[in-house]
Length: 117
Image (cartoon, rainbow, N blue to C red):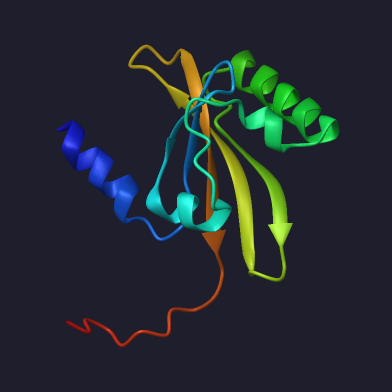
């Protein structure tokens, strides 16, 4: 089953960066590696953010920790790329917070033909 979930992440065209609770990057999908042009796996995500952004990461993690229902926060709008960015909580089977990831949602309408196989 692990391979199925990993494949979902690898095939996603949006960048996905997964961090553990210490903000260490544990996974970057191919889209994230291509966009950021650096492999941050094993490094702190905080090293590539200014202090104000790190304070916001801390605030979101604290909010995630307050309730098992606190799971997604809108964090950024990029008009140039027409996308919204979110921080999403990752939880274990008991609902305990184990990490988080950055989710990109592009708002452009798809231009590919339907079922273009």
